[in-house]
Image (cartoon, rainbow, N blue to C red):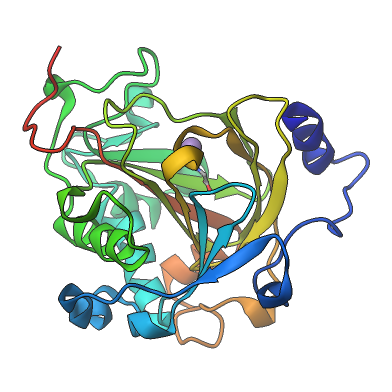
Length: 301
Ligand code: OGA
Ligand code: MN
């Protein structure tokens, strides 16, 4: 099921129809596949605007009835909030000690920073695919280790916490954001189907925040044969994989160019900044995880 759907939406020689792709921007309130959830407001949410979010009472939160724990939050960011996070991803989170996919290629001289260098070195940004923060995911061993751990950005940790609290996740107060992958996609990028199972903590939710160009997101189930759902992720949208959906198969078969009128950076006053121009042909995804079990301070082996 999953592989067939992935191939269908990925195909360039026979472009897919989008009829069966759920679009939360349109009429999903009346969709029988999801139920609307009321945000859980806590005192921490008075900080929403500090983190670029609109008032939590206005968030539109949906849960899939046949994939419990799979939650969709329709863009809860202000336009300026989106700009802040996009700039953090490009300018701050790409700085050392964070790890980048291009590190082994020695594109940067010692002390040089990616974003600054990219302003004068054409083609460098095209090579950027991911940055890891906090516990750095080891793509070969698929394990986290104390030897590859740096401070997690406090702003992203707090944003993550506000999201987890707003959906009333059972991780509650013990939730900590400890690892993130910032994914950078071009118009022809894909992310194959996978489960995220490297984290010792498999009960805390996975958070996924999207900016820039839209994507088609596929979610299956525990098995590759389970039914698959396709949905659009637009700039600002958040997907939470929690409870049973925490370890479901998922992937991105296609980036879909966003209509210029639907681009929050266009007309938002930042379309002419370097970050805004980057988004004209790119998508950014902040993928946040808790690694440790509640009460633990380090990885136990
Ligand atoms: C991941 C992931 C999804 C996305 O980084 O593990 O599933 O929307 N990303 O980019
Ligand atoms: Mn994933």
